Length: 99
Image 1 (cartoon, rainbow, N blue to C red):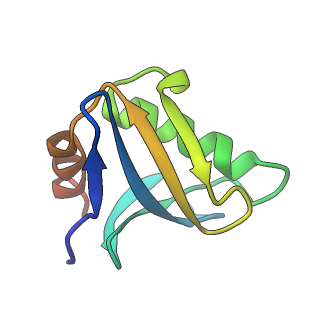
Image 2 (image 1 turned 120 degrees about the vertical axis):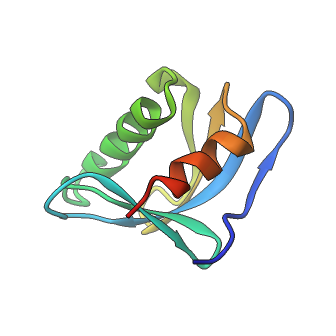
């Protein structure tokens, strides 16, 4: 497993996510090339996977959905997210729980 490339500005954490849409379940799969790898059941159609990604990570990290912002990669499998109210350590803990 590689290291998650995440940076904090004190209020929020910015990191990359690699999405695997149309999976059998929503899950954090670990780290791939410095990005958090997440499996989602939603298809990559009309923003469904993006909406599911923000909702899933908000719940997993214990923040409101409004605190998870998609900054880059709306139509790409690799995205950059900003999450307010969490630390880099919380992200590392989420990765540690991955299978």
